[in-house]
Image (spheres, rainbow, N blue to C red):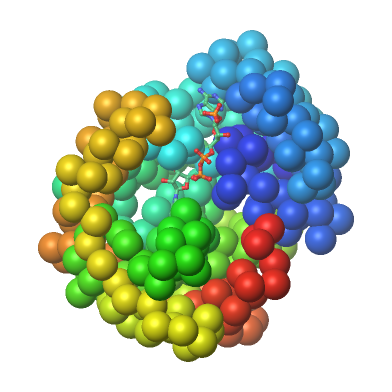
Length: 287
Ligand SMILES: NC(=O)c1ccc[n+]([C@@H]2O[C@H](COP(=O)([O-])OP(=O)(O)OC[C@H]3O[C@@H](n4cnc5c(N)ncnc54)[C@H](OP(=O)(O)O)[C@@H]3O)[C@@H](O)[C@H]2O)c1
């Protein structure tokens, strides 16, 4: 049995789908009962509902588990404490493998959610458990919230400059990489950066969108104040808004980019290109 935490999020569902394709049995840990259906549909054999800070729940979740895939929630102020709890429960249960969903360049102190992940990685080294750490770059799926404006207005409007350089990865490739390290031997002790083959400015992303949609699409910067107002209206917490703003400023100043060699080797094929992913959106909005 493989335990997946944070299972109902987009990452969790992608990992479960990939494990299901390998016929691996998954126990999904979700936060709220209304999330049960989504992980069942993704292929989870068992579901457990509750809070990652609940020690009793964690003990139940770890029973008869061979491997844990820990996905920290997006922009959570207590990511380190949460990671420590999950790690301790995994040690108590003597699981054979602990796989951590980190992020590309966790060394980046200017982005709190990266820095918190580095601290969790440090705890993992000290845990005595066999581990794998996966460090994915920006998901191609992050384009989807902008899809409507792209299609209807021909504008790809993001809260950083069109010159911002990012390396993209398809979440489906990340899920497949996770399933590989969880089900195949020989990965213990590894830290793998997961990057797709495209490092692009947002202007270049707009060009790809134009080609695929066969109509002009231009990249445009959404002022941070406007983004802030929208995020506040959408109910994003103070911590999440502040952390995301720091991320946007970091992206604009330095970019976030890496190399696809590791993911290509791990998958045994070329990772998905952004153009292929975007073409898929025209036919398959569910990705
Ligand atoms: N997006 C990217 O491009 C990218 C790239 C690399 C790495 N990452 C990392 O990937 C991770 C997962 O991202 P995601 O977007 O898939 O996350 P997500 O959608 O936020 O999913 C996380 C899940 O964790 C649950 N959760 C929150 N607090 C919990 C608690 N106390 N106990 C139990 N469950 C709890 C959430 O439930 P609720 O809905 O109830 O809160 C949610 O279902 C993040 O740490 C992110 O930094 C993201």
